[in-house]
Image (cartoon, rainbow, N blue to C red; front, side, top):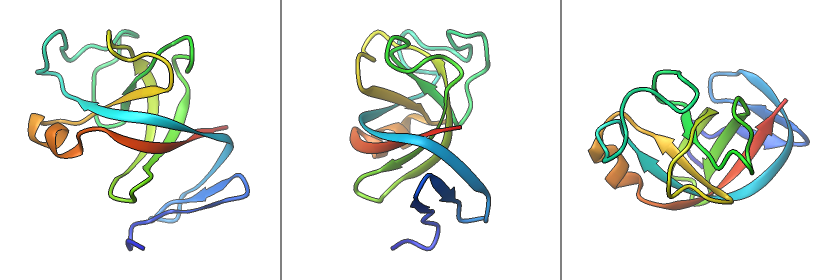
Length: 121
């Protein structure tokens, strides 16, 4: 296990820096990556916030805007951590999340991965 891996179980997440989060449920999602320079994207989200690490594009009929999540890829390579549903994208439908990264290179490296999404209280 990676040293920055959170401890997750029984509705509680303990992050690498000791923060304690509680969650109500977890679900499997496909995750992809986007950045503000992608076609059709800019620095303002659908909800009017400014993109940053932690901004998540969702299908608002599946995940309501404002929902806080803790996102970990199933391969263990990425602990995206806390994200908030603040954006939507044309290709984001159903159980699909698009995670914001600051650079195109990071997006390419991330690619598409299955992830466990913990819905925070």
